[in-house]
Length: 491
Ligand code: ATP
Image (cartoon, helix red, strand yellow):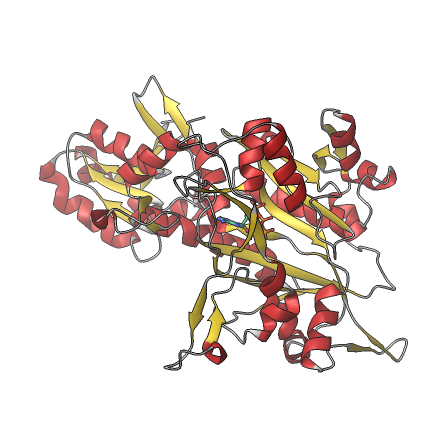
């Protein structure tokens, strides 16, 4: 596996991701996606939407506004509490996120520590500024929301925020969506789009940035009926489990089936176990290495006050096990908050009991698109010493370009162009005439192109082309008349 810096350099070289506006020196925590990166990101989002919305009867989508009424953020608690603790150097002014700094300096789990605890640890271990080694000031909270002004006014009544997560409008608009789509509990609302957090220390390339995208799902159930009817579909699925108890005892994570995890009470809610398994399966279905994932339960200190149980789906990055996706059992916290704050009834009428129900959110898989982007790239990146180039073994579903069309020699360009024109409307492909055929294959490998089609002198006689498989380099001869359906089936 490459380091995160090697991957970042590769992404820039091949046109996946650049630091934003690099000609002006960039801007920390912001990135631009180049031609291949824009395609890969869009394919990840398309696959997520297809899997979570189109292929299910119990989930519908919505697309909320990035800037919304700030009362939404008062109700959700973001205005008052969406903050990280920050340490500032008394001499050079450098600011670091306290929990991350302590985790690195003391090799401990520091998420959720109070300001007092952070100050105590800094004092006890005589920790100093990583840049100039001077003492820190007292730790301070820092709200991560970006604020802006709406309209020409500049007083506090115009203040609004860029959303720090996509989730809240799925609660605020809950009643409209449920009524319009005629949904019955249990059901989910899905949304994807940009989120913004003024992170104190953006780091690890795309992993922690200040502008990113989320793919989120709020799954609502009737609290009186907590059974998951789809459990059988995942009960044999194996997860590497790192429970709160294992963390407290210092035990190594254990592989467990979903059925065992529920039977032993390691995971409490059926729906929670179901969604953890389903999210793991989504990654695997798109070519990720199942062995690099685990689920980790939040220990009491890191758990939000409203969550009865929280699990993260984590991936083993070269810089350690890190959160890909968070999943809290939020019960009716958000619905109650928005009902209280808006004074509107968001409950549903249950035909069976003839009673109003305030749905509970038992699981809310919330995944960062860029973190998924990193996972697929890390698992696809193969340094093939024999070929002498990188082979990006992305699933054909995710590959930015599906097919490369080449002519063996320039003399055959016209013939090759005809083949390219034949398939380009249905399959995203590229027509490459630059350099030797070997050079073109190597370039295609690095771009993650799963199939290369080569037109040679025999094509003129047999009306067939050679199709090369990126991962095996095996070549097969396919009739031009069958080429499109052959490639469509493969991709
Ligand atoms: P972390 O502990 O890593 O800061 P979080 O617990 O604050 O993450 P959530 O609020 O649960 O994250 O957000 C849901 C998901 O959004 C995360 O699991 C992650 O995939 C993504 N995400 C959150 N913050 C960032 C960020 N700064 N850059 C990229 N992705 C992010």
